[in-house]
Amino acid sequence: MNAVWAKKNLTDSVFRMLCVCCAGFTGLLMLAFFVQLYVESYGAWEKFGINFIISSEWDPSRDVYGALPGIVGTLSTTAIALVIALPLSFAAAMYLSDAAPLPGAVLSHAVDLLAAIPSVIYGMWGLFLVTPVMQDYVQPFFSETLGLSQVPGLRLIFGPDYNGFGIFTAGVILALMIMPYICAVMRDVFRMTPPMLRESAYGIGCTRWETARDVVLRYGIRGILGGVFIGLGRALGETMAVLFVIGNVMEMPETSYSGATTIASAIANNFSEATGMQRSALFALGFILLAMSFGIQVLAQYYLHATGAKRGESR
Amino acid sequence: MKKKTLFWRKLNDRFHTLFSAASVFIAVTGMILVLYTVVIRGMDAVSLDFFLNSSRPYGVEGGGIANAILGSVMITVFAAVLAIPPAVLAGIFLSEYPDAGRAVAVLRFAANVMMGVPSVLVGLFVYVIIVVPSGHFSGFAASVSLAVIMFPLIMRTTEDMLGMVPNSLRESSLALGMTKMRSILCIVCRSARNGLLTGILLAVARVSGETAPLLFTAMFADAWPSDFFTRPTANMPVLITEYTTNSPFAEMHTAGWGASLVITAAVLAVNIVTRIVFREKNNAG
Image (cartoon, rainbow over all chains, first blue to last red; front, side, top):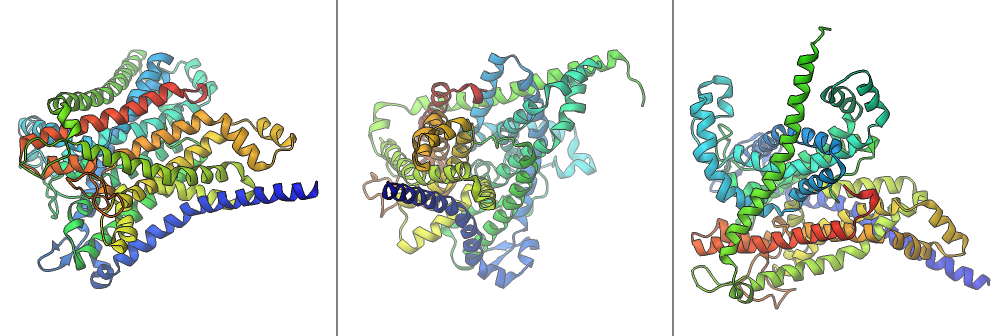
């Protein structure tokens, strides 16, 4: 009998060890990403130092590289995407969590399916359909019909020159892509608001919007922030959809209608031809992107941890 | 606080209700627009030859996408084989061994972070650890990069799904004298089977459309994917990218749309079928 138990115990501990190793692998992987990108980009950091981040020159012929255009492009596309996607996902999540069960479920799945479409399809769709529409209708409408390109403060966003490509178009497509992620987290958060709170609000005569704004939003603000950071992380790292429509110019963008580049699309676009210092600089860009997305994930985890909301990835 | 009239408040409420419905409408319309375009443009390319011939170099007529379909399937299946078993075990560790305390929290955090790592960086990573040492692009390297993306996804869904299994099941199986391993594999995992399968299939569907990591790992080739481990391997996402961005030929754009149609249809079919077949009460909606 003892021998049997000993054997069973052994299999148990072996199994446990196996699980520990597999799980530990993720931690190892995370460390490996940082170490490897840093080691590969060491040449660029050594040569340019911290100036790499604030220099806007990217000139392979003179072997001088700076990350600023990529960083600016990444941040501005992400900002545009968030500005568009955030109110839309909040409102959509509000609608979906209040909707009748059957249409609600169907529409929720429909929104989730937006996240399932591969990003290269968005890129292609953007290139062949969104860019012409932007060039012929949307951008002239803002810049000329409304005359926004003449307004000093708005010049940065609605520039006088446009060709359909650029930060603005990329941001619009990114907005559509990150909306399902933010929406899914928000839906979870809204469902977790205790019904009693909501009903009390209705009970004292609040309208639906007042309940949503003053009760549900306040109650779930941490979860909502978590969802925002999840969407932010997606938008930062999105490569293909952006690559197709951003124009891929390694220059500081003048307005949101100018061609630009993001870190991810710069890597995808230049990496296969790059050698020597340029390759190292691209790795350095990758390191910056990794650090950015790490920071955002940490914030997302921090806010989502308290609410226990799922991450909207696996549904 | 200034008091607002009931009329104003009701109007405001109506406006926001309308805006909510409009947002859902925008999202759904966006999806339908994308799908509509892909279907309409893709149908032009679809023919029997398209599915049977391998791709041809630029300008040569009569090319298909058969080699890319085969290559994509090989890359994805191999990635699934690499990632699924360890990822499920890792998920089991997170969910079933809470006595490990801080380690669980740290590893869960690591998995969440890994889920957010941009896929293009995964491509760089695998390029350095596999393509550079081995000296050639290969389908295998692509599989590894997809496996790296899949691993944390499956790990976290496994944990979530096992977490939904009631504790009474674990306790009764242990009380019957099962070892912990048997209890986990035969009772806990079994009762969470539908959830696990959903998570795994959705993760596979998700990575099968990943493009960025394949650019530096699988590359592309017009040949059939016969040397999966040693040569660049044809695959759908890179084919779409190459055909649409690097080619002036209208036929190639059409072929790109055709390939998009195939990949979108496959990914959505997996998604929809999984959601319908493995629907459970507690994670519906």
